[in-house]
Length: 350
Image (cartoon, rainbow, N blue to C red; front, side):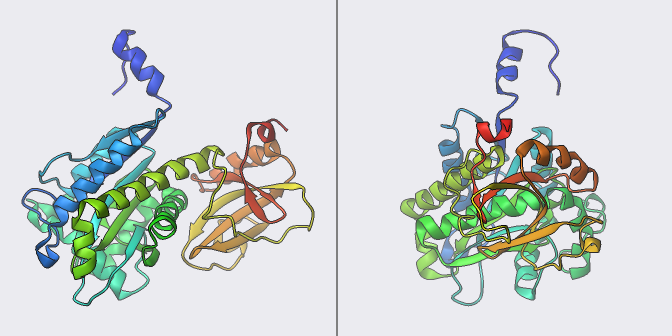
């Protein structure tokens, strides 16, 4: 909705229009309890953590929070995406709890993509199966079948423009779980989550841990566990936002990045075009005809870059070219002697 009257309400909107908008989605709810491992309720834990994350982020003056639900109500997957899209958010984070018939434990973070193994497909299938609670789900989701692996292929193209930043956001969240809470690292993964399909922004699904694991379930159901997880997610979102604007001083997820550069202390700028859990050969046909490609690897993620530029302004002049090639989520990063560094205001003026 566009506001056209210059009243007090419009002034407030104008002041906040540049804020970073985060949609927080508590999985399940109402008649959909989610998994109930060890008699814990996923819908309750997800909601508690979501509200705590929102409360922490709301203290940041330049972040606006939108919730898909703030109480125990049922929402369709399509409604959740509608809320995110109407808000024109910068990031969508859906929070869930995992389940397995083993004693599996640990946190993992997902973005939309083709499942690399059957385990990832089973997780996505479990979350996607909630559409069976909806009326006319066959027509609403255009024949999507959660039980058919081939249905996942149709999902992936919808989020292709945002995959680069989705993986970056997921990496910040996953690394926060590991570095701040010492959680078992089940890494960033890709799978076909229907709730992420129609969100037109970077989107992430978080599995906090396994309720079916007696110890982990008790932790996630506790006030301490929920506070811990909320703090880790909030810190990650703040750091992800700072990384996009070049204001992140200590980016722990990238400190160990190594790239092949001349061994000197001059700053080199590169345009990050994509990130992936897969190692892709640096051939132009794999990157929409682009050449002059490099790759880094850290924290289970490969990041792919175009070009090497001596100044920020030179890199910026090529950014629109890269975006026209189809990499709409591309952005500039700076490196000194192979290590990623913060981009400050002085560097942008050079």
